[in-house]
Image (cartoon, rainbow, N blue to C red; front, side, top):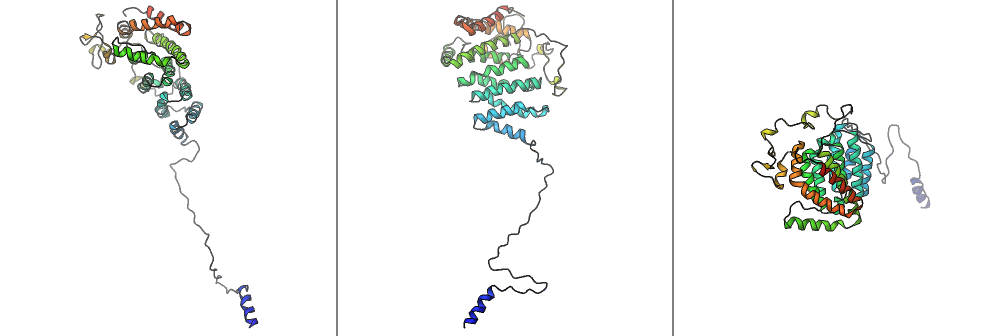
Length: 338
């Protein structure tokens, strides 16, 4: 009896003898750990680190963190592409940041704007309509913080682009930005008073100085003939045929007397458009490409109110009084008719 149990115990530890060509039986607790692998070939998709980095960075401009948006703008400024075809995507992605809630994001965007304008001369002219749209939106924004930095973007356009076509739009919204009433009705006066209530804090006071300083540059750029230096040669990275689709600078428009697309002020100096008296509502339909039209619009509509408000700033003294005085000198130097 004892020997039988002993043999059964030894059976568990006895090595089975295998015949040639036969494998050992697998135990009951055996687990199959083998696996199969396959390779996937994507010949049209780059796996380098720079393949989709630009699109990925631009997507982060919508990140909820203002620090992330700022860092992406710094990254873009440090690694601007040399290929001009990529700037359309860049411009369309960064424009909404003009009305960003964060001041540091907007200031970093100003730096990026200037870097793009220097590296790609003439690029902003191709996107001027969209840029002006966001700048005007920032001029009339409900948040004073957004309005305080908008003139910095406008200054870049003044220095590196041709904004004469948007003379009326910019000047009208500048009155709103400064809290000046262009109309003398009670509604516009009340709106101006409510807007002035947001100019009492320190940041807004400093911003007003910048607004008046840049208004001075705007008047100098749009109310006088530009001196063209033909000796300067700039290597641009835009399409060489782009000039065919842009309005020429500082030259008369040969078909403007036909009035095919816009209304035009008559030559008699009375300031009428299409047979009716010129009013503020007509400004959006008047072409301002030529200096004579801009001069007449300034003298007939903007100049009286502009001089009145600038004299009010002159009485405040300080930096804003000095900048207001510079603007008044420009307005006084303007001839009544061109």
